[in-house]
Length: 217
Image (cartoon, rainbow, N blue to C red):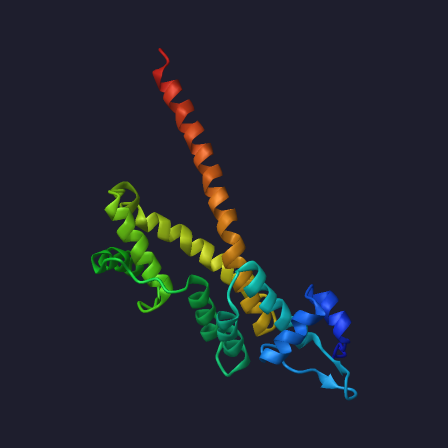
């Protein structure tokens, strides 16, 4: 069994890439558990403290969440919530409040969800954000995209599965949730860029095919 790591505040700050003042603030706010006292003015900290600080740093620095939302996630991973419940809380705070613009869009989304056999929560911000997106596409008369909603859902399913496989490799709940945060925030620009590159590829491929068809035999 590996020996537990103990470190002073300065080492904790260096390894977490946070200032000593910031760590002390998180201690005062109850976001970080207290260290083991070695004297009146000294304490040592362990890997659990480092994991918590890395999670908080991901939530504040990468996701840009206020401390009130950070506290919601910290409370979820600290309490008796399951990893699934903690992930749900994290998804909710990352998306924020997103009320659907029109309930008419819900059946379109529900049909695709049913076809994929997904287990989803209609009350979740993720579902509400999806309904709003479908409604906006309908309002802009982008029926060509809506007609292929099942294809987009299939692609999303592959991404979602890959995300969970990457998250599942983590040993501790703080690290799992940290990967949820970083994966959700940092994957978006990557995925958007990959889609644009794929568009470039197929646009050029279609152009070549069209040119070949127009050539006389």
